[in-house]
Amino acid sequence: ALCAISATTAEFFNDKDNIAINVIITLFSLSASIAIIVSGIRKVKLLTVNFGLIMLCVLVYITIFAGRFEIIYSGIACIVMGGILLFLNYRMSKAFKAKEAEKNA
Image (tube, rainbow, N blue to C red; front, side):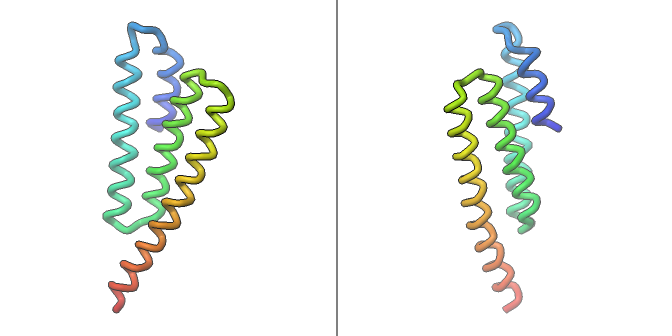
């Protein structure tokens, strides 16, 4: 919901006078997604971590598309974010499995 609010406000508050509102909402969305990621890591819940990561990716995509970058940069950002998601999921699933095995031992 925060990312959708950020996307909506990016379109309406795109002029120089209201850029502070857009920055505040973007920073709020960024801090909320990072808090969700940290909460998921502490609780050892991969689903919560993925939710935070997807929220972060949506925020990056919205920033890129609202910034009116060229299509090549948008495509590169999509590929890079997808690769980051895959890599982080792989690393965290290994770490969470190791923690679970350590708990059961």
